[in-house]
Image 1 (cartoon, one colour):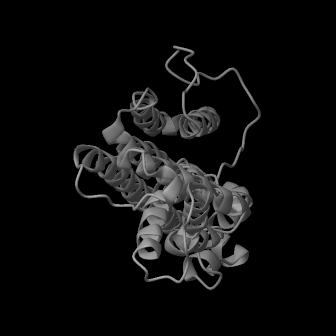
Image 2 (cartoon, one colour; image 1 turned 30 degrees about the vertical axis):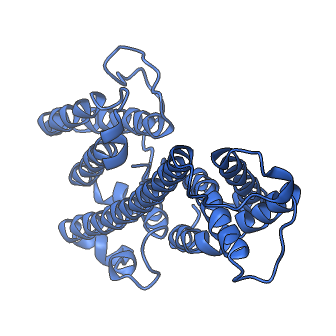
Length: 319
């Protein structure tokens, strides 16, 4: 996941090994961020090792942990994309290394890095969170072991909240995608069923379309519904934000609207033709116009997904 954890830099750029030597450019944005974070941590580990030779063994272990992340930066299958296993593994490993590096830093270094840790934590934790506020410079320097424990506790809470946030975003993405695929499948099934049925017509053709095949009329109504959904979705799609997530929530919201709109249009026209709505449809143009109007009405159906995405993204403060 693209958790933007703290990225303190306590050493200038040096000629430090930064990867497996393949030079491969990551495909996805989240992979680019993981690669950048790994390179940053490798540089920090190099600096820590140069400053204290006794930490060489521990630094080697942490480097080995980071090396395990290199293998997940290739192409992902559909299952990996849906479950997010590679993203989870990559960022949770990086987080574990970050917390372990606290043990290798001096109290003075931790004190200098504390504002960065707190700024990162403030994106996910409430302002009154004890782990965020439980610091006092004078007391902390006098008790270095307790200070390290408090910093690790802060990172642990931050990472846990970040993981939970990204898991919620991934679940929302998957649910919207599932509903979209189901809606598209239902629309395709309607057309196929109408094509194979000559005695039952889902939509009564207008007087100027009596010779049009029922399945073709249904298909054009679905297209008109999709057009109405697209028009009504433009404002929300423009104003939607992704929050830096790898799950493309605005795209999934737009896909959901385009998939649900045609179904709403068909259902609405069936109500109109059935006499449940006081509107007459006397021509094909009028029929398609009503379909566009009902397709635009998908906004009432998909508004819940928009609200949930907005609520989810507003829980994270901008860095």
